[in-house]
Every structure is written in C-alpha cells, then in structure tokens.
Amino acid sequence: MEGKTETFERIPIISKERLAFIDNLHKKESQDRTNKSEAILVSLIDEKNGRRLEYDLKETCTIGRHVKMCDIVLDYDRTVSSRQCKLHLSKGKVYVSDLGGTNSTYLNNHKINEPTKIQTGDVLGFGRVDLIIKINE
Image (cartoon, rainbow, N blue to C red):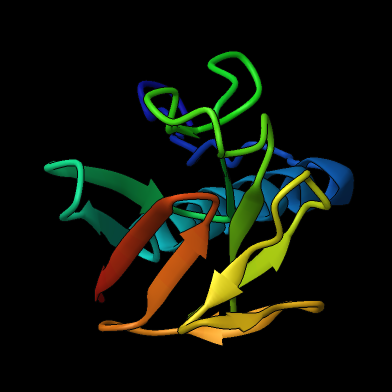
C-alpha cells in the first residue's frame, strides 16, 4: 500500500436538536415574510377637514387624538377621544372596535358595541369627524 492514499468524504455530524432549531428558524422566517405581505393599506378620508390618512394595517391600529397613544392621530378635532377606536385584522378582514371614549364610535351612523367588520365605502364617525374608509387589499 505504499504511495496510495485513501480519501474520505467528511460528513459533519449535526445533532437532532440543532436540526430542529434550524427548521424552526426557517419556519419563523417564512411566517415573517407571510405576515409582511398580509399588510392591508387602509385609507381614511376626512372630506370635511380635507385630510387623508393612510396606514399599513398588519395587526392592530389605534385611532384617536393622543399622539403618543395612537397610530392614526386626529389631533385637529377635540371631539375625538384620546383613544377612540382600534382597527384590527382577522382572517384577512378589517374590523373596528370602540375603545370606550367620551364620544362613541359609529359605523354608517350606527353605534358599534362589539368588533364590527368594515369595508370600502363605510363611514366611521366619532365626535364631529366622519372618515370614509378605503381598503386596498
């Protein structure tokens, strides 16, 4: 066997725990990419005050007058509560829930008392503000 060298292919040994960790990491990255693509652009049009507000809704979004507590801020009208309502996404649909402020939240002139599905053309109202909803899916 003089002068003849044997070569071996090196196969790294990976533990089952390490493989499970890598699999979970790939699943989480895949879910993160899916969640990012599920964001829905919600436009709120205030014709009376000449404003258009837009938000990429991924999970929830709070609407109100208080800058530090809300994602969509309506600080131009004192009849809007500090935290008026929230929009949230569930199974690809957008819902609105009142947060119990001084002035109730209305959808198409009907007071809402529970999470209610909204769609393009609906009108959200609170205080003296009416917002026309446009949902870009």
